[in-house]
Image 1 (cartoon, rainbow, N blue to C red):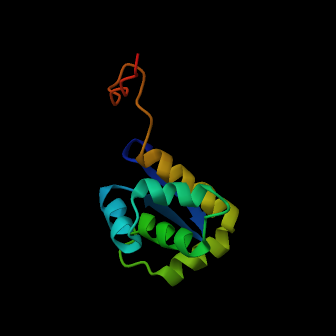
Image 2: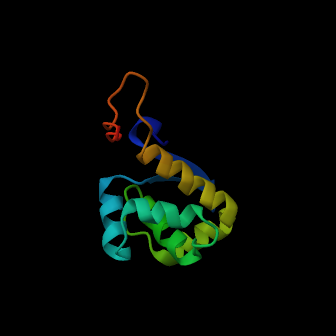
Image 3: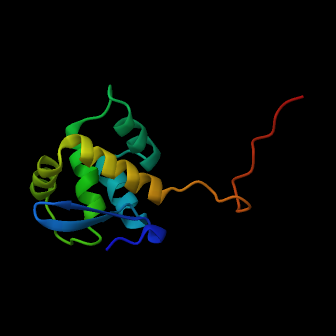
Length: 117
């Protein structure tokens, strides 16, 4: 069962419950394998003109690795096929949101950039 407080997202596919998480290790793995920052990867995936199935499959697989060690790109593609590409994309979006949540009210936020004048 996924723990939303820890940035985990669960779903059913291929007769099994899967849990994904885009934690620090997954982010580093994605940056190393793609040569892009996690912010760039997120932007590429949400824009239909830059999103590729190849990148989506890589991110999907990497997000599954924490709970399904050794999962392959082929297995990740098979799971995406079972879910449907739209639902798989939605689950990745949920995992990104869970990994990089907005600051809670009253919580710490990055300082605002100074404005001129």
